[in-house]
Image (cartoon, rainbow, N blue to C red; front, side, top):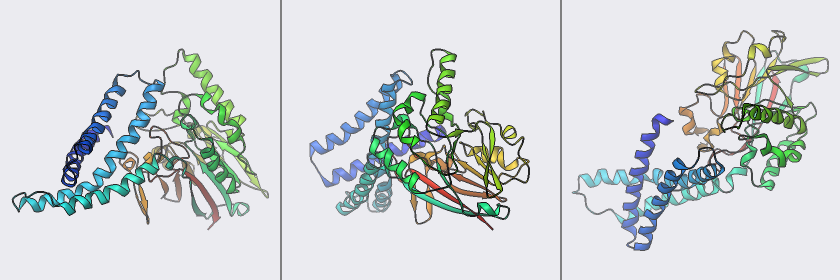
Length: 392
């Protein structure tokens, strides 16, 4: 993503200048035109402020959150209306560059206006616009007792970002409404510290599943992204977070395997600590988790980062039937319409949202329950995934 930053900045500048020309064609109001550049100056000033404010401080995090939302609110409408102006300029090139056509500038605004409203929805109501996504997966070696077994998966809660109790309750009620056999949580309960969950413990403790609730840790759960006064303080925080999992009724799996039994048959649930590429820590140990698991067992793995699937799981000596991950959030920004799926995160993660399949092994990447950084979601709505296992 860092390598693409110059391209993003270039697109920002070009779209900014072009959109201003369209606006200038439609109005001569000094107030409107001055406000246009004033917004740009405020955004640039905020970017500079973020650089000089103490890294990791609450002030910096809050400023970054609002800055991301405002930048998308101004950038996305301009970017998607840019092609209209570019096409017009291609024709003006052969016509001696006459003044811009009034109707073209109107068309530009007509494209930008709904996009502005979509982004505005995303950074206001989109953060709790939960969607249920369902997948039915067939396996020839699934035990008969587990034919029709249902899993509800949530991931990336990031409780430190929550401010709306009613919005969170809406999502948790949706989880319970699925009535699945188990609820699996695949990491990132908090942004940085265990205390972020304190006020949310009663709400998450209300999640119910007849065959249990199970969880793993994500990269944010270790407290690696803030400064601690001592190494002991960091360790104490992680110990407290593990206790929080117990208090909300989840069995935390730390490179472990447990057996789920039904009508005399069983499947194995595996959970590993976070393992990621690209600078993320690789705490997880799949060999340790599977050490006492029979080769012929049907296995479901919880692993926070989807890069673990291609990095380790696919080549593992034991056949892992289904891996459940999160981590990417779908970047909280993208497009999903009529089977088309796109987000900038696809240029970072090969498997970034939805279902993937390779040689009889499945990976499902959940788009996430909460949000981080951007205080909202645009196109990539928060997700409750329901997966049904069927015999083939």
